[in-house]
Image (cartoon, rainbow, N blue to C red; front, side):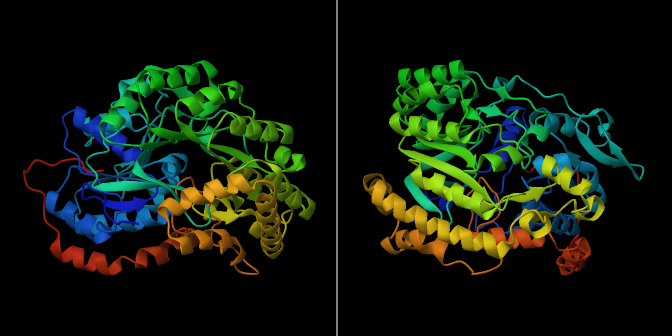
Length: 524
């Protein structure tokens, strides 16, 4: 695979940082200057970012991160920035920061503001009141040495008011791939993501999305979505993935978007996620006609007992119906997300999951160990059961099987997963040979033969006991080693993590520069 696109940008495999891209567009429309960095870019490691901040001396530096596993990296970078510049204002944002704002502020005194919830209006308000953000809703900060937790910001339903994300200011091109054990390239078209709605009202015990969005679902208008599609096609994009938590919620809206795409002559291929109990399944043919190529379902388990334990509010029959309907409608790639190692799951339940995955007309599938994160109903349950310590464990993540005695041991989970994958692959090859061949042929258009072979055999090369490599629940496609490192860092005590930047602090203390009257610019 070429390392650079035709425009000279470095190619990276994964999802664009749509959060900071959205904030950059908001800031620029309001007349601010903004510089973005993505740590997926090998040319901008922490040292480069810190040096640019020292050189440009921005008014505000915002660090956005999604989850528990990203938090240690954010802390390290924040401390490096503070060592280099004692005066720059630092802000944290994102889902993890929102759900743990007061704890984060105490653990990271280097950070001036922890921003909670939607960031578009918040960052504009904060820039107006950097010296005294008393009236900025959704900010946790310190005043006269005392922590201040401003009131929550009201959820804004008027999402059409914001500009399209600033995708052109980041010198990266992203490669579209599937979230498998070995990331599999889907196309070399110019790829990006789009958010057409926010939130999901269903109460799955392992998910923090309903908490972050207050159990609400908010959507952009169909016309606004179609306008962004036209904008992306004009910029040369050929593939888009919706990062909506549940795109398949409102049938009339889906129908209008599909009609608008076709009427506008948009040819971009796109993908989305949704629940198997969606009432919009009669629109799968319309979605396929509007170039929906990929549809991903959160199936989780083939055992109704486990589905009920996870509060999925769906049935095995609905799973079978949704996958069948999607394939019959002409959706090229239907993916199933599964979890293993759930509370109260037995060996028989795991085998039922792999048996179901074998029989379904799925093109791709992923089986991840269930993890628990603070902010989810399952975390609350584990606190009440005494399995996690809220005071000491709030910034960590755990595989459920490591702490919950009702889960199968890790060794048993890995053994059943390996055996189940063998049965699944054999079934696919013997019962769905044409479907399997078509998928492998797509992968081989853009991947070396040996990489495709590794993709197939990788699930069988894992350790015989202990954790496997791909066990961090994530929507983004990352390298397994990076995931493992991130997961391990969440269990490192904060004082040891701080030691990692002591040398940087020592150097920074000798080279700090007092801010002059130069115009400072926000950096996200």
